[in-house]
Length: 301
Image (cartoon, rainbow, N blue to C red; front, side, top):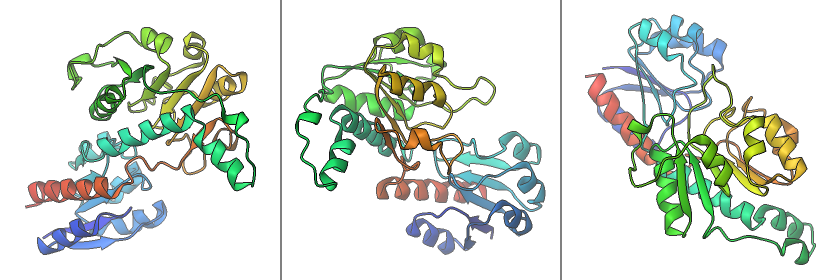
């Protein structure tokens, strides 16, 4: 049977299942220099966000047959290089959709009612009721989705249940899952939306999807939610528009330069900042683990 390395943790029941299937499982995170030294003995590696499967790692993976990302994207894996070496690359795109969508919704509520800021003042022993008297309701507002895959569709369903009006832009309309949601141009979405939530991969060639020019077209008081990938929103432009008041607030789970985000954005009083935990629910990780087991059962017979 196969030797499997799990670098960023996995649901304990899934690990037990792999062992029951006869596989030799090692759970250990390695910094890249150590990973390069160790990877050659394994047939399969399972990663999440922390481990980067770079070209040097792949070149050292002499016995590797399968790389699995326990999550939606594969941007931390040099996919083309792995495939050129005959290594299969898989992910678990559906397992964490509901969890990420719920987090995006939670951020929308937190910004609309200034939950984080009010909580901080209470913990400082203050009672600033008047300072937080201008909250806004989410119901009746326009949610603009950039990307209408699994996560975007899940968020749309939840938003509609709250009485929001949902409109979406997707570069690949033929691949859109929920055909009941009206598709618009990107310009229409960013001009009309009260909340803009991104659910797309980061394109290294094209750069940020939301640029400084896009912010100019938005409504004053717009809310930006990024639970997708660091870099899909121009962070410098976002900071400038938070400071000017054009953007009411931003919820950010993903950052350029993780795990060291720019401090001026992460500490901004109008930002709900969290450390890439969109998929970090017990339920999502159970589903991720189950999908990983299924992939290994199918690919490493």
